[in-house]
Amino acid sequence: MGTQDNEQTATTGRRTLLGAAVLGAGGVLGLSGQAAAAGGGHGGGGHGGGLKSLPRPTIIGHRGASGYRPEHTLGSYQLALDLGADIVEAGDLVPTRDGHLVCRHEPEIGGTTDVASHPEFAGRRKTKSLDGVPTTGWFTEDFTLAELKTLRATERIPANRPHNTLYDGRWEIPTFEEVLAWQDEQTRKKGRQVWIYPELKHPTYFREQGLGLEERVAKVLRRHGKDREDSPVILQSFEPTSIRRMDRLVGNPLVVLLSGADTRPWDFETTGDPRTTADLITPAGLREIASYAQGIGPTLDLLIPKDAAGRLTSPTTLVRDAHKAGLLLHPYTMRNENPFLPAEFRKGTDPDAYGDVFGAYRVYFATGIDGVFTDNPDTGLLARQDLVNR
Image (tube, rainbow, N blue to C red):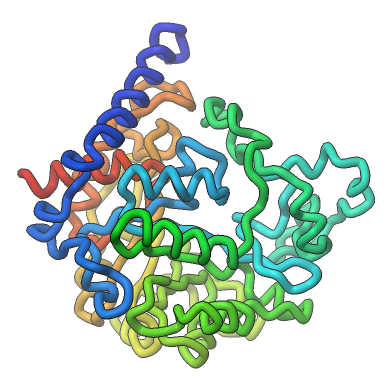
């Protein structure tokens, strides 16, 4: 596509979805009854409710509502919640030089903030090895919190989401403490428990710099009384040893994130553990994960691989095997735009245009997953409504 008419159609479709979500906050997305039929209701959540209080499949706002606002900003988190997300992934946690926890997708912030336009920080630009990958830019661990607060967030993928650049510069980098305060405030305002799903980013990388994440995260959660089994905070990481460490420090629900089948978690690389993700998703590997975690967050390709043309093939046995081990599955990431969808659900070639994302949801929901991360929570909620009303 790419013509003006097609661009207008994509924009109209996006507005229709947003309008349906906002207008349906008390009806279309007020899914307590329908969600209960799918496996749970909103209930009270939080203390006394725990994971079982959440609807199934659970719709998780990936970095907030990052399809509509720059990711990991209070604006993105708030929109995800207002659109009806069951959980907000509020916080990819990385540390500052003075030990505070802030929310950024990566420690390198050149692609998600306006740091490059600050001449006073030009000398902070450097190249580091981030999990074995040479990475050039500006890194949170080289800034104090006060310095980071002078920056403003920007859209990470403007080629796919030029509409999000409207909000560049509007929000600062939030701290984990601010997110927890926001969670409490919104819980009071919404009259229901708000859930968050922070990720510990690159824990081995930061531990080697004397900035261990796990102890810092646990300390903050304990201070806020959110370190228990029924606390409305799910913790996740791509490094299994980090989740094992968190299991010893807090009682929160824990999730191991899983990348491609032939990849190795970075903590395995550094310790010489030869196992790959393919080993972790065997029945034996899943039973081991279940000894210290409550769920896994696999890439969607681990559920249904794609062929060379990018089309879906046959589902794997991962959902069945994980459930047999007692694990929840919250795969990532559903996005509305063409480049992020399986080839058979794309409509044209415009990188900002929406494809048949509802068709893709139907296929992934049919595998029996317990929830999904999505950049577009309103779309995910409508897809769940379709599932419940079938």
